[in-house]
Length: 395
Image (tube, rainbow, N blue to C red):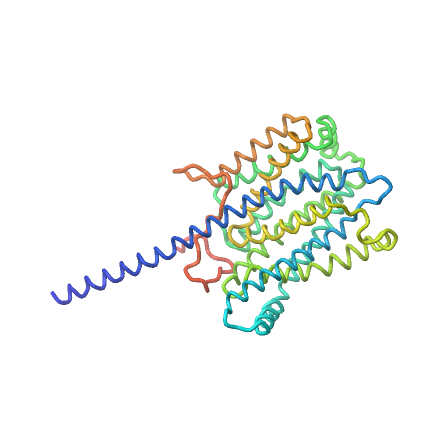
């Protein structure tokens, strides 16, 4: 009887501990889901506004003044992200060490930024530079329609690298939704300045092997495929790096490291090598106006929001949010500037919404407009994701 009573006390104690642990985890999970949805919604809004503002900044008449250089804007975006992330990283360090003096906080922040593993951020920084170069080569050798359609392969390459590097499993229903998403975004994208007959003629010419009016089509296709692969690899690599070290390194410290290493290719390759002569002739800030500064601010904000999306959701959810923003920006542009709404663009928008619903919906419940990460939270703050977790049950 005493033994039975002892076992009963142990069972009640274990049940109480489990209930207490579940009660503690529930607010954390709810907070995580709130951050996911808020960051994804903010990314949709930011991308939608950025598309319209950037288009206005690059196409508005400048008169006799030169148009601003994209390389200088990219450098200023990286500097803005670096300074903002540095402030947020310093705040996180102060919160983690409330009893430390200001000098100790600075020393700790310095050592965390230039830690022995900080060199790993050189890889995504170099890949981002390579991706931009490949995109430039693709645009130079392809017409706008072909580039916009084929560059949507980055949606599928991101999922492919998520499976290979993060060990994620994607169901057949989700694969179908991803293919539909790629096609839907392509349909919306090709509703740009070219007419319906124009883009059909150019795509048919490309399929037949004919010559596109913009130089070497095969070289452009190889460049855009390589850019899509590089985009997927870069995003997933950064996601793995952030999530594997979140217990010891803050998100904003990783963002500082990435922005710091991205400064060198932006400065050396973009500003000095590519546009050095134009800057020497016209000046660094030639063509700048409030619209350009707003574009830079929105791009920097987008970089910070993307980092939060990657940390608390994943790259697949980020791609869905970006695709939704394309639909929103197209609809807003049509309403604000009275542009005609084409049939294929409307069909593409419907396909994007359907794909988003399909990917995030469950058989027994309705879907959400913005997909969130379905991954289970770690059991402990110090738990790291495994390099290649086995998603199949062992025999």
